[in-house]
Length: 194
Image (tube, rainbow, N blue to C red):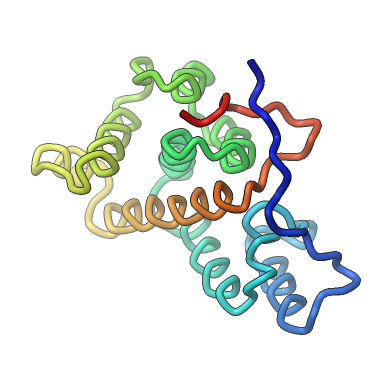
């Protein structure tokens, strides 16, 4: 059964009517690594209602997505794991294509979407998956789990992985609370939240 599409809880401000702080936020988003063609949708549409917060959040997001020492494949994989755990439709929609482009296998993505352990995932992805599952469920990780990820990533990238996870939890919460969904012609990844 397809997921229902609730209406967004906040209107997407029209670009022609943006206030000075809102315009400044959109200019900052477009001048960064996301590019000039980015439109105000998803979390950006929400942040336009609190542009000072949006400035800080988008700057952190630009760093988390494009400038960490975590390889793009593992970063996008971690974002999909977070999107699945939060059943964040928009986050999945936005990050499934980059995950594929970065080298996450289609079968791994299918397993994640279905809520299955991605048994065919690469060894480093499985280490990250186990780290994420343990962190989100137990609110900490064991020494064994930590050492597996740390041996792959080292100090800086392990710190940044935790930051990526925290940032995308915030994004998922924002998208879910304000009911921001993919465009109407895009298929939703998940059925109704349980």
